[in-house]
Amino acid sequence: MATAAHRAARTHTDGRAGEAALETAYKMAFDAAVAADERIEPRDWMPDAYHATLVRQIAQHAHSEIIGMQPEANWITRAPSLRRKAILMAKVQDEAGHGLYLYSAAETLGTSREELLDKLHSGRQKYSSIFNYPTLTWADVGAIGWLVDGAAITNQVPLCRCSYGPYARAMVRICKEESFHQRQGYELLLALSRGTPEQHDMAQDAVNRWWWPSLMMFGPPDDESRHSAQSMAWKIKRHSNDELRQRFVDICVPQAESLGLTLPDPELRWNEERGHHDFGPIDWDEFQQVLKGNGPCNEQRINQRRRAHEEGAWVREAAAAYAAKHSEEAGAERV
Amino acid sequence: MTNTDWPLWEVFVRSRRGLSHTHAGSLHAPDAEFALRNARDLYTRRGEGVSIWVVPSAAITASSPDEKDPFFEPAADKPYRHPTFYEIPEGVQHL
Ligand SMILES: [Fe+2]
Ligand SMILES: [Fe+2]
Image (spheres, rainbow over the protein chains, first blue to last red):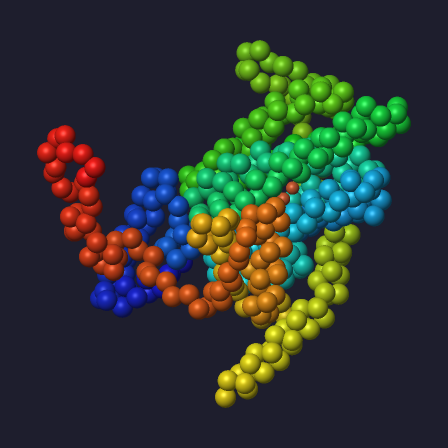
């Protein structure tokens, strides 16, 4: 990516050789900054592949926050109490905010908001597969908060130290807000688990359905993860998929115990030697299927997103017309 | 007219009285008034601020990103602007 400084400097060097030397100098400065754990900022020179990786990752992350509003919003009107309803609305609103922080971070890389939304709506950019599963009961809201937000936190905390400044700053803000998401989910599940036998079963059923998809949120195993090694070299990523997945499993086991619920994995057990829990194989075929668009809700989620965008067009147009009219009036007064 | 025709704004938030406004992030809005409202909803949902500034991003003029830019050179060779430059005999107080 040629920055303004790059272009300006280029005019002062003569010919191809000068340009190549300059490119090398920029590359060295970039590598040194990453090695020294400094942050790369929007107007710095960066390798094209680093730029492309960041756009892809931040966009996918932003889309996930926005699409992620849907499964939970599904239960707002049916929340069992005013307290739960207010909490759920605040959570879903936070997810909208997370999406906006991340879209802003992506825009610092020179992609427009419209382009990002276009690519989401046309399927050219992805969002996290987890949101293609349905929320069948109220307990799913709890399971999402505990497990899905929990997995997201495990993934996101190291991203607060990501080498790209705007992404890291967005993640700091997001992580601060996520802990409420996870705790409200845990509390909700606890209330159900300690409630009537039917409520307890509902909580267990939700955990049974969300556990494995949550483990898939960390992405494919390390030996099959295409971008992992390069992302770690660039310090976009700090830990491997499997490492984070293991961390999450180890955190969840005692939490499930305190909930009085079980995790749906007969092979789950403490491994004294490793100092970690062993767990059963993940169904990566299912993951690939959902990724390809064949999950239970892929179509519903993207259609709902497109519809919301189209039906909101008049609001955007009205606000723009209002702004244009008032800036004209202000201009006329000044004359 | 579409969403992207809304200009980008930079948001600065004063977290409490006595502190200066700090850059919080950016957002799109059709005008300043909307930018303020959006900023309130986006950056102060938990009482993070007592005052907000919004500035059109296009109105900001920035220095070059290169840290070795000659722009900052005048400051680099003037250590005498720092108090540690001066040697004071031991025992002299309040200096
Ligand atoms: Fe979020
Ligand atoms: Fe969340």
